[in-house]
Image (cartoon, rainbow, N blue to C red; front, side):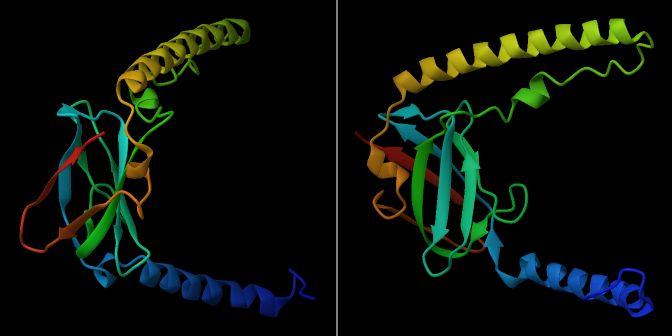
Length: 184
């Protein structure tokens, strides 16, 4: 059993921290797995597919790259960091409609900073009003999402990496722009 006040325990902490830090840096070194920028567009019956998750799984490794389609059906893939690309080689691909996506909510409706209001009752009232406004917008976004989803029902097979039938190759030194055309 260890004793936190024990001198040997305290002297071991800095070296344990450094070993852990070196391990983490080694595990997340992006140079260990070559990536290439990947972007594309997803359509369903000739129309852009909005709000879909696009996932590439490299065929020989258990590594995933993913992205989300925008209002034009376009996506950019990320593996280790924001829009850093996908692993080189053949990938199986899945496309799934995102059921609930509120990633844009914080950007479009940030929580106001009411810390400058000194009176606690006034601050509470301002926070409650901001919460009501945010909740109304969230409900509106949910209704918009449901209307959009009703128009964009894609076959279930596309949501499974093994069953989608979509296989694409990510290459180095070439533009990796993929047009993914889904059919009923």
